[in-house]
Amino acid sequence: MKRVFVAGTILLLAGCHVNRQAEISRLDAPNGIVRLDYGQAMLQNAYSDEYVNNGTAAKACQTMGFATASAYGQPIKTCTLISGSLCLNETVTIQYKCMGYAVNPNANNPWY
Image 1: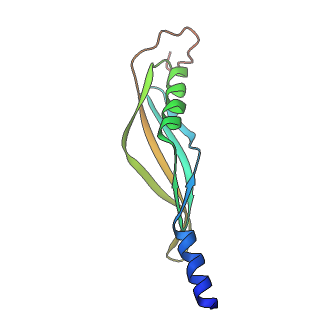
Image 2: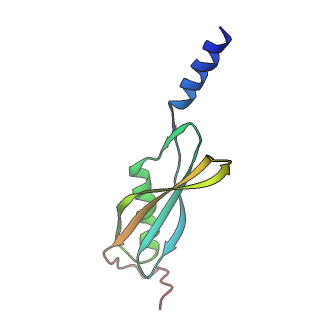
Image 3: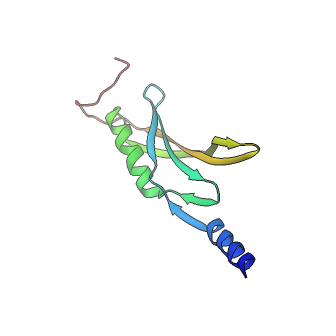
């Protein structure tokens, strides 16, 4: 009975979907690139809301003087905590390309 309980618990944990809030990790103003990161633990299936991520990236692009943001490429997974040969924690990076020119006199443009 104990084995069945342990096996059931492991299966439940393996199927967990966890919503994570992606945060800005790096801004590249001259190239117009915004990178957002969120963490994912072992045995979790973390995801992040694309609509919220796009809004966060667009706001960051607008502070750099661009009009909007568009996601490009695939999410990049990087192992941040290793124990032996197992990856215990991953960081998922989502990249956005800033597009257009926003007429905003309050924009912080570091290149001029």
